[in-house]
Image 1 (cartoon, rainbow, N blue to C red):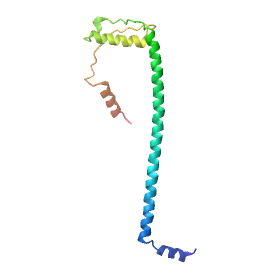
Image 2: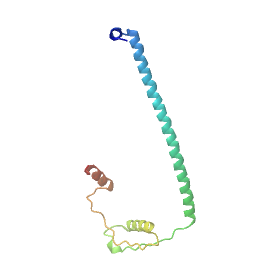
Image 3: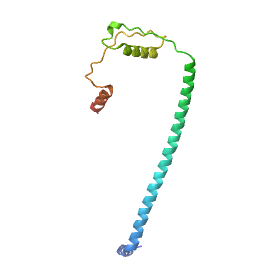
Image 4: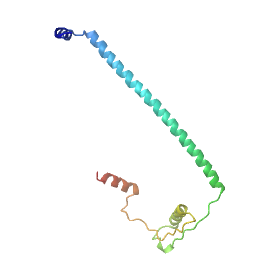
Length: 140
């Protein structure tokens, strides 16, 4: 093929019908590829969801078995001493809940003692609001 043949091929143009057919082929191929990939992704996500659900159901079953064994054996009651004068206006119910949480965390083997319970003076922001401020103001 020489230079004159290339020039002749370049001068030949496709008719309007041939251009339409070529562009329709490109568009159709694009649609087929896109929808095939979407269907593939749907199947992958469904399979992943089924695997996760099986794992969660297995975890629930094991937790139920553990709960049944724990329900059969009563937990020992552990008292965590709190000095009533050092609660700074905190109600007795709150003190009881905090004491129960400490007793649950440390159990009866550790010697845990609550020395004081004070209301926080954080300016009215919740822990979530503080975390948001810290996250948004952290340097790069």
